Length: 491
Image (cartoon, rainbow, N blue to C red):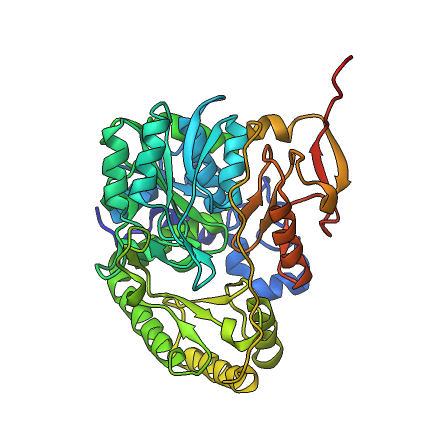
């Protein structure tokens, strides 16, 4: 196939140039009916291709024309048998993956440091999660991936599992040995699904970790918008049918059930053109991002009080490989939280980072960055360290990550069960009926169906008190929590 082609984007431009008389949605009619200030800001070109699924432009729900051709080009570019465009973000692709293989009551093996969309999918499917503990890095205060050893133990105990889900790479860019895990799961006749939200560039450069499709995984959800240049909310789902575990027709059906019928052609066109750019120039642009990231990492490690991990962390099952474009700056020795640093950078240098946690900030270096921007970040970090780093006694925050809670109910049963509201600080021993997670990165601390422990309560309260963004419960202050009603025994 000719990767220079952009069948969908080309069709959209041709249709806009024909200047049709439109008696269909969207109601702004090429921008004429839109707010004037917004139209002037966005430009007429954007409004001219904000279309719906009329015949010349194909239909994402049942593609047979330019969208089908665009998706075939993407499949070739990403090494998949089938690729599906998502205008529901990678969350929509992840939910599709899980609902394509799980029915109510099915088990699925998942790491605990999953994105909330994975738990949403488990609730929708009525599946039962079998959790694997990711390896905790006490020095950095973050989680890495799961090990082959832990996946093997899970498969030995639950050979009836319908799938294994792996995060590759993690939000911080670290990978386990994905190929080994895929081969292991397949030896048990269990398919492997990959949350590849932060791995679009790994398809296009040999110095980056192995992609899910290259490792032989059965499905992977990949955020093109995060690192690959497409617009926010545009992602893809790659499918490998060679192992016989995935029915592409069922994937299309599930995807259609979860996708709006008013699909955004602007988002779809951004996927089409980003695929072209990655297919033709992916190695070059990934190389540029790698060089900038390594420059940034080396300079950060010259700043007293700061540390940015690199290849020195490799060599364990959980740290088999890593993506250097994820620049994690460890700030514990400044006596600040990552949240403090995120706010300081915003207030003093107008810098926005990807995320902050107790001990780190994460900066993503992408093909859209320049050395000038990296130098602004480095200047800011040097000033920050000069203000807060001291060689004397330091106050360092210590937060012990609690053990995985006991799962007492299938998440869907808890989510839809009879509930009541109780004070969160008095909820130890109760079964939670909602999510509590830190976002970003969206990793759950408590999930529907789990028993709340005092360690969970202390951990969440610590996060709330230092200002980290704890989300999920209906009570945004996390003073109250929804739990399953306890019924008294009849005497």
